Length: 282
Image (cartoon, rainbow, N blue to C red; front, side, top):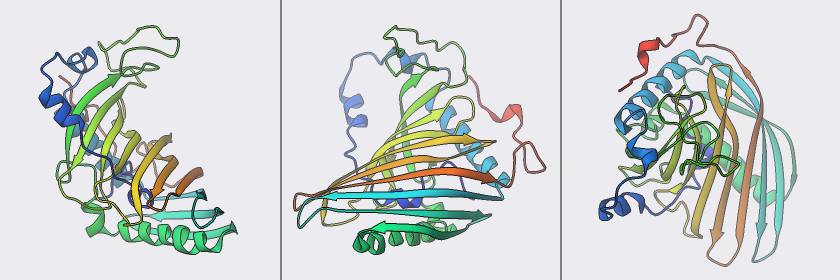
């Protein structure tokens, strides 16, 4: 079953981050931060709600269209290269994705060997068998709760003005649970790092990670920063930035901006609608 907030396959090719958080917690006997011990929900409850809500959104989503702008800048040996491509993307339930290239400029090498391959990889990852192995759930990942951020407040309880105003007594809209995620199998399509989960919709809103397995011999490090946004009742990618450090000394920065979403279904319509009892509480 397709989970809408699972990270897009086009970015899975760039993930790889050392798993240090679990080891750090296991070796440190100091008390856990208040943002963890006083979080409204436990890690099991957060994950249960995340999986349940993802399944509900996946059942409800029948169709969407969007515009994407791919940009890649490479700096290094044997020379600098840049390219840009604009794509119209279409999704039809349960697993069909189609892409139409609207415009493309810059390096033909990047367009043919990077952009086009990303589109092909995303189609492949949408197939049911592959998709099931990359979903953000307990079959594929282990989870650790490492923080709770109330609306406008970071994981240390400090808001944008520098004032400690962490309120963990209620599940305010805009609150975020921060989870460390560790894949159970090594693959270039799964990742390890941190995810932020909305405390009301229980959808992934942000991911900072790298692949569990290096996707290429030619890269020595890869990192991804991914953001989501809410459109009607669903959460979709908003922006991705992937940075790859090349063994020969170069650096490639890929950005994907997602916009102009047109959604063909709603949780408030005829599709399956989550009940208020669908969210676990303490």
